[in-house]
Image (cartoon, rainbow, N blue to C red; front, side):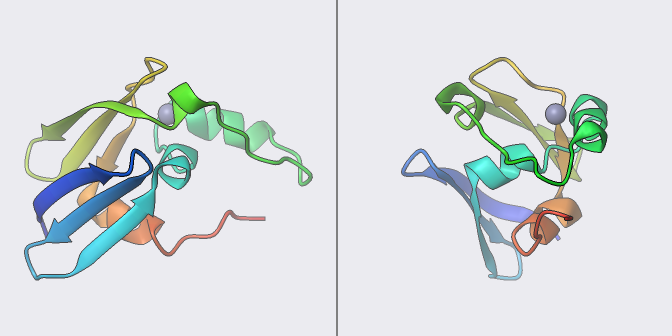
Length: 101
Ligand SMILES: [Zn+2]
């Protein structure tokens, strides 16, 4: 499944229209929280159960989006973080994901 259209709405939602006509609306804070890169995953393992995610403005604003091959989206955030490569299948999952604790 590939996106037909990708855009950021109201500086807070990543909107994706998929080739089958379905749409995803993913809050940017959730997208950042779900960053699949090794740095973020390692940080997450260190979190305690009482951890409350907090993101500053620059961490939840997208500076640039790059299509990687034909399977993923690389997101560069305004704070410079750009190691997260979001596979399309993963993006579809994030929308429905809850934090695992
Ligand atoms: Zn990351």
